Image (cartoon, rainbow, N blue to C red; front, side, top):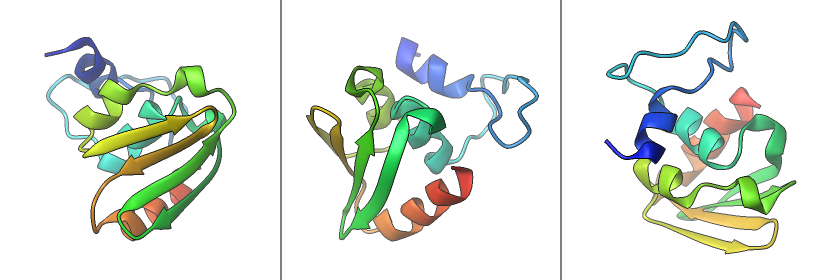
Length: 103
């Protein structure tokens, strides 16, 4: 297991705020993993679906972990400063809605 996969598997439970970490084998939703790959909920300024991509603006582009995003199922990641596009395929609309719920 890579460091990025390990980090994604042990994220803070953002829904309860309890700080409890998930066990290594426990399932995590793709939306939660993408939020963490984008540097966490506090780093995301805006997110929207665009056909097969999640178009995002983040506060700090250096917090974006491309390896974690790919481990979460992204087919590709395009970064330019604070603008990040995560290629996720036809589930972009659903993922954007799920991420909005998390934020």
